[in-house]
Image (cartoon, rainbow over all chains, first blue to last red; front, side, top):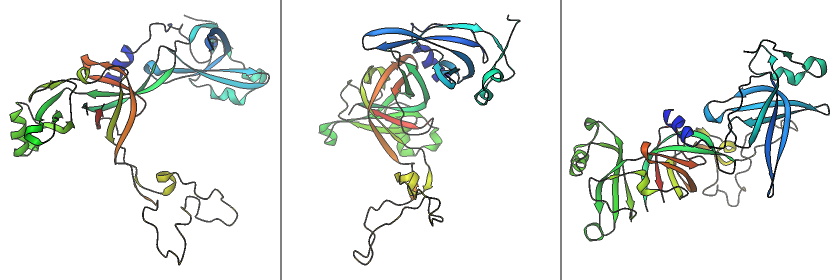
Length: 119
Length: 207
């Protein structure tokens, strides 16, 4: 296990940004670099974080949003160099680490309460 | 064939410069001790025999204890010969480390023993599809192999017919794997993709 951590430590890419700390339930906007041929542009994906999974350098998080009434989820590697930046739009108050129940809910029921007291 | 003996540590994923996430395997390779050097004159072919991993002396035959003492080393758990080893000049008793054999970006082969899966049916073992229907008169046939040949002519089952049997736990050689990184200070090498065997399994890396 130690050897794996050591390798992850050694293989870290300099360009990878340190993202601000966020939790499941937070509304975020992920600004993701997209390379089209020789051009590079930034696309943002706004939604709620419904899970953070994995460990170490291979951690990922899932963002869910409703697009024209259809739920869309996207999984981002936490330490991907393709993430230009991440903004936290709203802190959410939730009672579990994986918010899979949101997949069953639509409209007003799929809202997440805001966490007012943020350290 | 140049190479080294190693131990599979586990898998992780790393990002390349281009931002791609690549699955990779970590192998602890070497240091290996040269236990015998074979030459054209003495043995009819040239080769380097090396040992890797420790083993208690009481678990090694007296013949092997003598063999290791010639190289002035302790008992090794795995001894493997590499024919026409020419990347570095080595004498008996010398230590071979990973950075002497491989560089970043090398294309290598990995030999190991695959994970044992036990006695498996044809669907898992050979990728047969079975019968895809649960209805239309099917009963107990969903993972069956189907026909294994014609009837009174040839009146036998052809040799090599793929059937159920022991799956895995077999020597496997994977070719054209890329070395992503060599970390000589901890004797580690990072290889792109998966390699045969369980964690802790002995693998042979060759170039």
